[in-house]
Image (cartoon, rainbow, N blue to C red; front, side, top):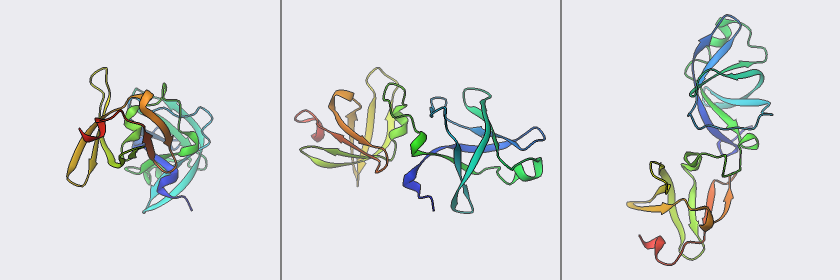
Length: 171
């Protein structure tokens, strides 16, 4: 059985496309995944179900066309409308140069000295210095998404470990 920590939200099915079971999936414009992706995971009635990909291609910067194996008609494809689509962690691009900072929303942030700082709830990438909004209970912090301060990223456990300069964790 596939667990939520084994996947990353990719988007959702907007509608069917054509008559052969193809689906229009809405994704973030900066979404990136490995080219050899064999399957995607769909949330069907609260259960994460894998579907093997017959074809996948871009339609626009925020929509892709996906054809799953054995989904060959509009009637079969309609059952997917509104369904959330997930990308298995094994196909997530882990190169920070190619990865979107928004990928880290819901990750836990730990510092080598200060310990657990909270969960990333938002990303501000409107300036050259990308910032994570980190929330722990009622406390909110703004932590720079500076690669030089990041010790490790655990995409399975969804944890970013920092070694922040003195005083940054208290901001």
